[in-house]
Figure 1 (spheres, rainbow, N blue to C red):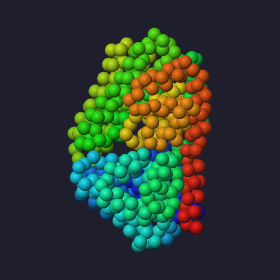
Figure 2 (figure 1 turned 45 degrees about the vertical axis):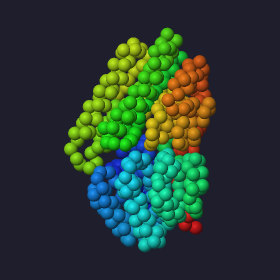
Figure 3 (figure 1 turned 120 degrees about the horizontal axis):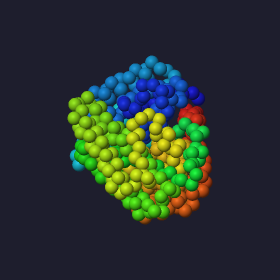
Length: 428
């Protein structure tokens, strides 16, 4: 079975212009990262972007019709295509208007894609969910919405999901023919954090870009930014308070690197321009981001933590990988969605991880094996986890080695082999 028999359908703005120009992990989070990874490693990679449009409903409709036409044309002229693989993720909508939620969910678009591929062209349909939010998304819908989702997914020949918890949910709520786990992949690297350990100095990396760029609650983007900023402030203050209380003990033995914030600010601000509207809101968000990063620096100075804590501007390409190589332990915040690529990168560089439990993280971080999963907002749990590595510094290498073992199952080459097996199983 070859990939030339598969047509991938996904978000309109996910495809990189040059899939091979940058490491896949640099190209985005969630389904964007998955698509950029597939584009880099699958030849030929047949892709049409026509779902998850941005902007107003009219703009979404216009762009969907363009994508739908491209899909129709591709299926009409490309006789090799036998499988249509839909790459998707869900966004939690907090709008009270059920009709607006229905439109913005893109369910109508997916139903039309299903009719085109399955009924008109008689192709096999694969639906690939790349989000941790599907269970909450489904259960938050009214009965009509749930029935529409059930009807749609039961028309699929196969469902793909990222982890065991999603597999159990799909099997218990949908009478689907086949359900498989296909994890998010990553290109493995040989570099490890262990080779950069500086004597007895333990370097903790707090990577917080997604806490600012990916939280999208109700209201406009400014409201989303405010909630994300408040969350990040509380999380960082908790960690900085811990460093301040233990200053005399940690001095010369522990360093905290705060990275990713500025990068996340720019990504969040730039996301406002998909509909070609004036960038006033984006500029306001960027200005707030600069104020926030300045606030972090001032807070470090006020607490006199300059020798213990360093804030790093990660707007330069390649600096993220350098930080992962330099650190010994990675602290990842509790964000709402789409941050699993950062987890994979930490595993890839052989870092133990301290993070709040959510979604598929239980597949990436085994508590006490390659890090610690704590409850969100559990400051005592965070302090206990940090203290563990301070008291047992050799565990940075032991747990880091465990991370390198765990990341093997996310190897993009193994993911592609599994996809080939799935397609062959579907067509035979």
